[in-house]
Length: 385
Figure 1 (cartoon, rainbow, N blue to C red):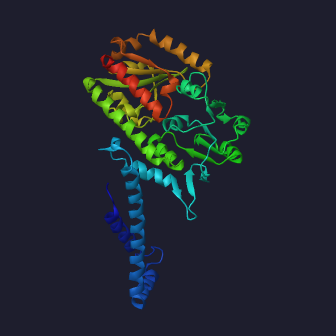
Figure 2 (cartoon, rainbow, N blue to C red; figure 1 turned 90 degrees about the horizontal axis):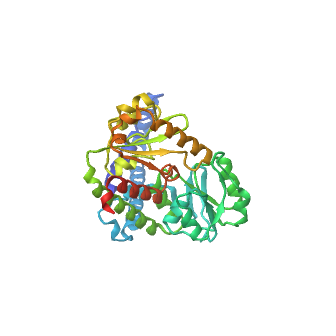
Figure 3 (cartoon, rainbow, N blue to C red; figure 1 turned 135 degrees about the horizontal axis):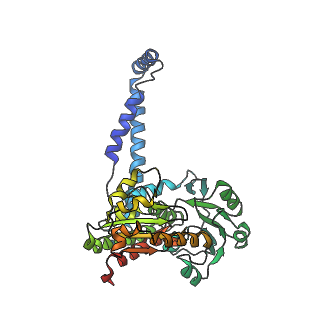
């Protein structure tokens, strides 16, 4: 495990040196003050600087050792994987305060974790909770959710979320008498504030799935399990990447059909699509790369023939939004399919357009991404089954 104590010492010394350079606003006064201080008590200044450096170095060493301990206690699944950065980021979000309390830092503030919570309600973080096999008394669920069958099989209660208004049924939450509420941080502050009146509430940024997984595990006292679970994910990615080498060089793109526009997803700047290229190593269409610098994702019908993509993953829908909106998007796609411009795209001509469920493909999460990976392999290398 890499440790950065030496480099941190250098950085700390540099900070100390730069701090002694004074202010630009009054250079003469600062210089004189520095000179007098140095002459009057050179040993004190040296000792203070040394103590600051030593303290900082000890803090960095402790953090590195904590990270190393977390990794070394996990299984052989982690062999060859460097999860140091992910774990360190997670430890910035979940840590012990001066009183020894476990604290979760999030978008809405900080929350002191209750001891051994038994009645957990999850809202839009079901993916990570199920990935870690954490018991829930209730969570968000709806017909067509990619986790619906698993949630129902476990007998978990339902929390209703108005997807369009992005609001929660507080009475339902209260009825389950939770001692901890776990939410995605996509809600407004007012929603968090109301939930916090019911029970301690922690929030995580689901777009940053890997860090959130480890941070959630640490908050719940199962960090080792979270790291092992992340190792399972990385192993799955590696195996899929190896399988997909047979289509190396064949261009892949991801498009989304909405009622009024078509969107082309970029190479690396969008967390819905970048796993295709950055993790699975698929070759992007040149326009996909160009869209990394686009002001928006919209692409006109007239530009569609410029796509040279061999394979197209196509989403017609709005994720978990209303059925009516999904029907409108599907109707728009039916119109597009009849357009001669659409027929000019190589993937269309080759029959390599793969229609996927928006309720899965417009979702973040560890399980969600694993399911997407399975579909990608099935689409591009169908002989593997």
